Image (cartoon, rainbow, N blue to C red; front, side, top):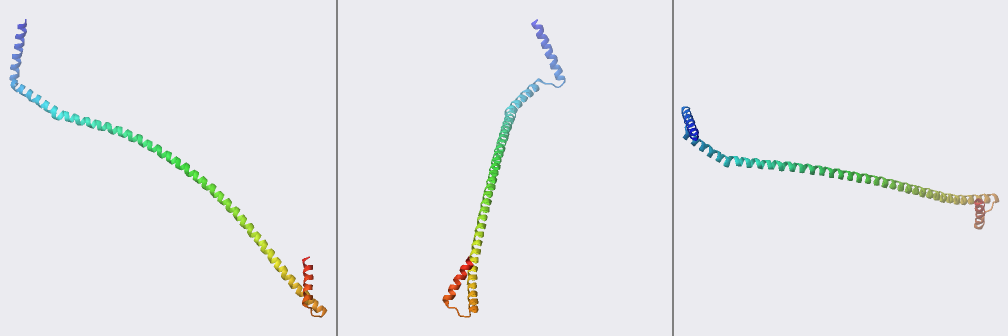
Length: 181
């Protein structure tokens, strides 16, 4: 049975060889083409496929690293934005506090200026009263002196005699006493 299979196999191989030769197939060329194809495959594997795969792997790693960096930058940007908002909020609060202090200070300064102006006005009024009193006293003194002269002249004309300095002094004193009362 084995020989039968061998003969059948041998016959099959022989018929295939004849068919292949009719169509231009030659085993030697086929084997040399297979060996050449194998060599080309090995060379392509070694010098083309592996470097291309290595470059693609490096690109894949760079892309992954870039994505990680992008996420990191996004997180840092969000953190910076949060810090910016905190700083702005603190600056706004500080500015508001400074504005309130300035308003309070301005109010205190205005109140102090008002009090100072009132005090100055009171001083001016007191000085005006003092000046008025001094002017009144001066005018009163002049009036007394003038009235004294008028009384002396009138007395001299009425009595017809020339008054002595003692008489004049005595009349002045009497007149000034009566005017003061």
